[in-house]
Image 1 (spheres, rainbow, N blue to C red):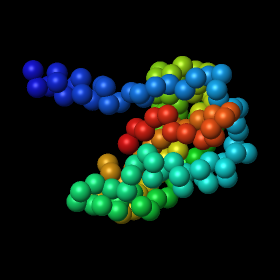
Image 2 (image 1 turned 90 degrees about the vertical axis):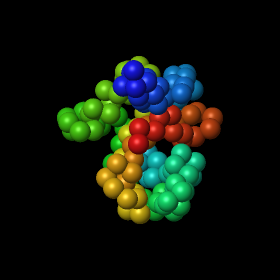
Image 3 (image 1 turned 120 degrees about the horizontal axis):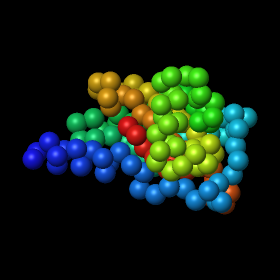
Length: 135
C-alpha cells in the first residue's frame, strides 16, 4: 500500500502542470542560445527559489551544462531521453519548439540536488518561460 502511494506521488510530480499552447510559441533555433542564457538569470530564481532549509543559498549559483533546442539533442543519448519526455508530456510539436537546459548547482549537497533540468519555450508575447522542471 505504501509503495502504491509513493508511486502515485512520483507520477503526479513528474508531469508538467500545464503544457504550452502551440499557437503561442515562437519558433527558435540554436542562434537564440545567448538569449536563453540571459533569460536564465530570471527563470532559475523563479523556478528553483534560492534553496531549502538546511541549504538556504544552494540555488543562488549555477552553471549551464547544456542549453539547446530539443531538436539538437538528437544523437546524444543522455539528452535525447529528455526530448522523449517532452514529446510524451506535451506532444511532438511542443517539444520541437522547446529547449532543454541542464544545470549544475555547485552549492548543493549531493548529486541529486546539484543537477537540474528544465524545459523552456518562448512565448510570442511573454518571452522565455519554464514549462517543466524535472529536477
